[in-house]
Length: 237
Image (tube, rainbow, N blue to C red):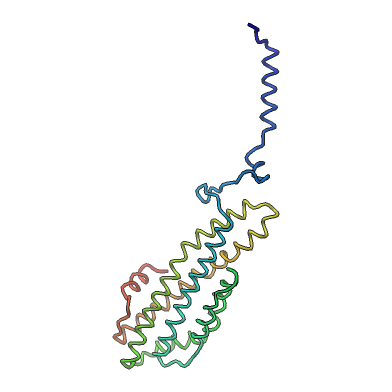
């Protein structure tokens, strides 16, 4: 049996080191498109760009639906208060045009508040007057108030989804190659915009809801879903 000399052992060790040094690292495989880097921010799950885009678009759709509910609710309550305006109807019609990219839908969310700015001021002023409403107007105000509660709850429900999308978007940007960066940023940007406008909108909606509930109480009007409003106002936006 042939004995392994010290010289032979050194040659074998040197060869093993050379093999290890030439083996591609995980990062190198990822750079070649042969491996996918997983993000710790998402619990180790690989973020799929197309799935992310679809989720972002669905969230924008949900926000549009919530905003439409807001505008339809305010139109009913404005009619009950005797406010002559078509601002809420115009805003609702603008929001119903859901065609286009996610960015287009987010822009719709940003611009509709400008359409109703003056009407919103008049709406608050009319409630502050506390003028007694007719039975018919009370019924209309109650219906609008119930829909407004639905709108606040619908929009608030999207905050958690948006926060998750923001984290996934950050992971996508960090793992994107220089060539992919621009495309990834284009689908992440609408999510970033939603994350800046939605919490403020929910806070404003909750504040308006508080005024609506106080006015309804002064008018002895029972708002459908008032228990949900009480819980919402108690927990804050």
